[in-house]
Structures are given as structure tokens and as C-alpha cells.
Amino acid sequence: MVADTSAVLRWIDAHFDDSVARLRDFLRIPSVGADPAHDADTRRAAEWLASELRGIGIEASLHDTPGHPMVVGRAEEGRGPRILYYGHYDVQPPDPLELWQSPPFEPVVVEGPHGPRIVARGAVDDKGQLLTILEALRAWKAVHGALPVPVTVFVEGEEESSSTNLEPFMEGHRGLLAADVVVVSDTLMPGIDQPAITTRLRGMVYAEVTVGGPAQDLHSGMFGGAVVNPIHVLAALVAGLHDDHGRVTVEGFYDRVQPLSPEERRSWRELGLDEGAILAAAGVDRSVGE
Ligand SMILES: [Zn+2]
Image 1 (tube, rainbow, N blue to C red):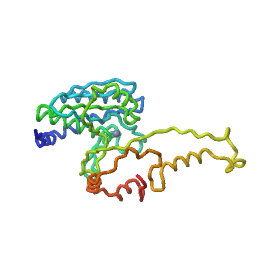
Image 2 (cartoon, helix red, strand yellow; image 1 turned 135 degrees about the vertical axis):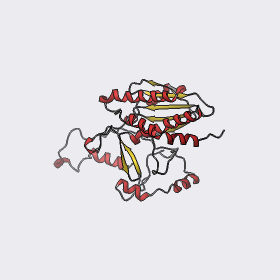
Image 3 (cartoon, rainbow, N blue to C red; image 1 turned 90 degrees about the horizontal axis):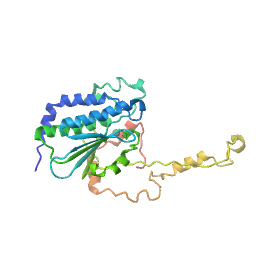
Image 4 (cartoon, helix red, strand yellow; image 1 turned 180 degrees about the vertical axis):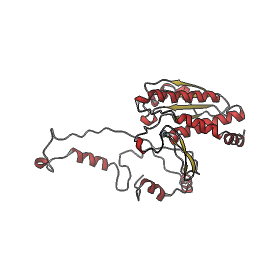
């Protein structure tokens, strides 16, 4: 079956203002997950989402964790692979407040270089992206009556604070979350006119390293330069994580890294990314390594 998307896109255009109004409602909830003073707000964002999903006709509920609740919605419609959409409803703290030109949780539309855009904390991370998925589901159901494939919507409230409860929750709810395809809403697009489907993301590794040294504080005039300073050892350790070409020197680091295929290299080249513009945005004039 070839799905008819043109009617869905027309429906989305015709109801654009309603979608923006819902996004504004979502943005007004100060779901600062890392700040306990906002715990009630953060939960309210989860409840708001679950109720939106139900409004679309997708069964949804909150699952409590030791931290913020998980929102899981499931639609058992259509046939074929199950798609799981992941996103997060928590936002970064808005500090420093004095740098905001409008209140962070009162969305405003401002004219930008590419047209009007909404400014509010979380608008582009991740509430805006997340709602595009909900609005697409809503539009599809409004036009076609039912989704073409089974869908799961999985939204957490701790992405901005290391997703502490994500992995244990996934381990404990394998059946609920089982899916054939996962689509992560929390990614970027190369440019305003270049929507993207991101197929890989970098990961992070944390390590706590303790370097021992002298038994007590030493006087620099007496011992400076004569004994090893632990800060020099730490600095050498950190500097040694990369070689002169920026390659990671940690043993085994590249063992499971797959080489890029010629097609991938070609498609990346075709994106036409402007390295100079990227470096300029970072305020530097050269890049290093990977
Ligand atoms: Zn995010």
C-alpha cells in the first residue's frame, strides 16, 4: 500500500495555528527536570503529553520511576513494523535569566533571519521536535482514521540530567517498548531548509580518575619542580587521550567503529555543509581530529 501523504500534509497546513497553540501550551510548562523546585511542573508536562496522546486516540499512561515519570503511548493500528518515537519533556534550566529578552516560559514569536520562530526554553530541545511527531500522528489519524503501522511513543523527563532511569526502565519494560524501528526526535537538521533523518549519534563515556601524590600540601618554594605535581600527571593523561592528528589513542576505541561507505561519504558531501560557517558559529578558525 502506498500511503497518501498529500492529504495529511494539507490537513497539517490547514490546522497549523492549532498545532502552534498546543506547542505554546507545552512550552509554558516549566519542566526543568534537574531542579526539584520544578518537580510538580515536570510531572505536569508528562501528564499534559499523556493527555494529548489520548486526545489523538493513542492509549497512554505515566510510569513512575525513582525520578521523573516515563510517558508511554501505544497505538495498535495498522500492520507492519512497529515504530517507536523517543523524545523528552524536560528542559534545561533557564539561567542566567537576565540574558533572556522575553520570559523563558512565555513563548513569543520573533522575526528571525529565516522567518518567524518561537522563542522559549525547550522550543528546539525537545518540545518542538516532539510535538511535530504528535501532530503528524494526529493529522494521519484525522485524515485516514487509523495509523498505517503500530506506533509507540516513549518520552522521558530526565534527558537533560543524564537519563538516570532510562536504561533500568527499558530493561524492566522490554515488552512494552519492543519495536522494529526507533526514531529519535532529539536531533538536529543541517539547515532551516534541510530536514534530516539522523542515523547515528555519538555517545559519551564518563570516568572518575584519582591521581595520588604527596602526603600533604607542599611549599612551592621548597618542593616545586622537585616532586611530581598530580595536576601535571592529570594534564598529561587528558592530553594523551588524542594524538597530534586528533585521533583517540585509547586502546580498542576504534575496534567496533564501522568504516564509512562511499555512498555515505557521497551523501554527506551532497549536504553542502559550510565548514567555515560551522567554525564561525563556534568562534574558532580551525577544527581538529574527529
Ligand atoms: Zn534534547
